Image (cartoon, rainbow, N blue to C red; front, side):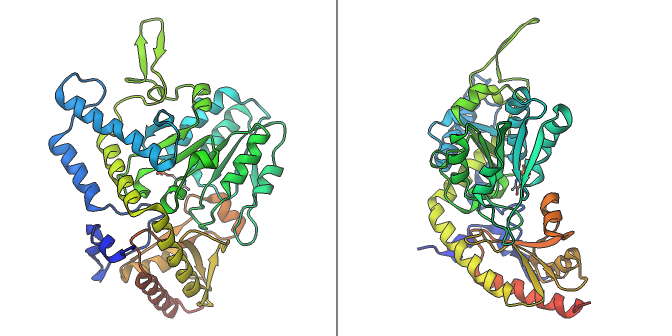
Amino acid sequence: MYDVEKIRADFPILHRQVNGKPLVYLDNGASAQKPQVVIDAISHAYSHEYSNVHRGLHYLSNLATDKYESVRGTIARFLGAPDEDEIVLNSGTTEGINMVAYGWAMPRLQAGDEIILSVMEHHANIVPWHFLRERQGVVLKWVETDDSGALDPQAVIDAITPRTKLIAVTHVSNVLGTVVDVKSICTAAHDRGVPVLVDGSQGAVHMPVDVKDMGCDFYAITGHKLYGPSGSGAIYVRKERMAEMRPFMGGGDMIREVTRDTVTYNDPPMKFEAGTPGIVQTIGLGVALDYMMDLGMQNIAAHEADLAAYAEQRLTGLNWISVQGQAAGKAAIFSFTMQGSAHAHDISTILDKKGVAVRAGQHCAGPLMDHLGVSATCRASFGLYNTRAEVDALIDALELAHDLFGDA
Ligand code: PMP
């Protein structure tokens, strides 16, 4: 039984007030809050178990290395990766996608080669591909969403040509909440010999992920949205792709031997992990993922599906609110605008006065904003600890904003 009140008790920040009101935290799409076990693990690591990893031959270094390295296995379990050596540890999705762009795509793609993107990608899954466009003439091909915000997998497949070298697509839109049928895309793309990168920043937060079943080549996650520390993350890289990838950053730990004239590299995945990593952040991420797996990803998904249905019903009941994206089975992420000239930033300021934290702006999704024909939206994004009462608090605060701004 999913006891949301018990779960909320695990998150100390949820008990604070903001502007004299109980915090209603609906900005989980940007960053989720941390349970006490994660906070304690960070404190414990720095207090009792801290040292640099991989290098030391002393007790603390070995201890820190064991703790840090064990997270690779935790992430592999969380993502259903067949082998923990397919997990590259990093600082988050942005680093993961850049690693693929520089290390895998850049040496392989030539002018005129194509990368297929959906129009709802986050800038982290756009700008690294623009680098390839600017620097080597790679062509970016965009697939639109339909009016509901759904992405037809067939439209992605239909965009494949003999020049297509990669499909890079989000699992869940950080703006619309649309869940993309990435498995169908991967299956059909592989039949045509095209690898698929999935941006799992939002997807892995809201539902069970099994990269083996999905069949993707790359799956990027970011720790701070997974109830873990910022500066932690990972990317699953299928073994065959790992073998094709060049190191993206050079430095300590990723080498086997360096001389004045030569360098040889460590085995993957270490080959792709240069320099001192986010040791404690990664340890914290491992604890966060264990926390989620203990709750059960199916249970989290079911709880959030209930919240999504309730939020959709309440938001669509306000005829002065336009919800962007109503694809079937969407995740509990709602972007909306208010009728009249009230700007998303003004609305979020009013909500904040009521203790309701939402995000306002473009959400790092410029092409999607253009596609929707809006300059900014407010976004309420729910997490495993949110409640129906918090949906009601959002609606009450929106009604206040509507009273203040009217249809002006
Ligand atoms: N992709 C998506 C869909 C996201 O929502 C985000 C975070 N807003 C990112 C990528 C980038 O994640 P990070 O900044 O943690 O690297």
